[in-house]
Length: 297
View 1 (cartoon, rainbow, N blue to C red):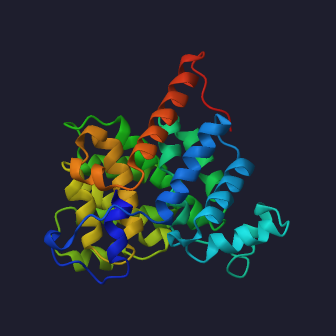
View 2 (cartoon, one colour):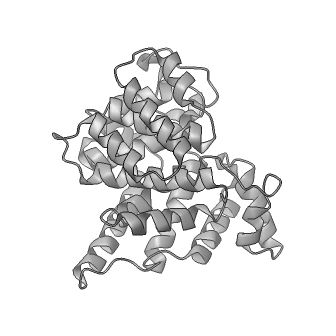
């Protein structure tokens, strides 16, 4: 929903008010790749990088018009020529790999599946990121976003304290650049000036300049799902992805019953998305019931 809300405003300097934000329901590559991640985890009964890479490529071939950034299609085209995905991803951007937010925008299913095992969550989120994003900032962004989803899922709605929520994510974070951004986010909670928020946290496609922003948007507006994602979109910039990441955290926190009914009705393939969520949760509970095992990696 956050992706669909932000899709119409991507690249805007800002959106002046909530009245300017209308929900159309059509989502982009952010949700398309999240769907692929969920489909792979369910079909494979856990994480397989090879299976997930093939699922991403297959979904892209079916709907390449979803608004994919330049990186993943380059990787998929190399894969079709026989280049292993491990090698293809490393060839992007003069061999440094991508540090964009593409790995973080799709990682919510891992945050759900591994929500009660921080180390397995980190390990799996990073391995999933490496399919397309091999730069350390791209990988760490995915891990942090997955943890934010898992933390929101486990927090009772009437007990969340924004400062404590951010402190737990700071403690989870291993990269100093992300720690610094998240500490800024904590200090910015009382600030109302949106230009100051984007100046200090960012609102662009780099994971470092969008993952902390999405977490901030949720923490600042955690009481209401619609308010959280609308606020994220109102910051401008990479609105679909920051909206998607904010929506993933806020949705995990509030649950499906708190999502706006009119948005559910308009959301593209909403029944399929809901079905994927149910299957993902059943997978999680099935492993938990079998001698408390966690899904394979």
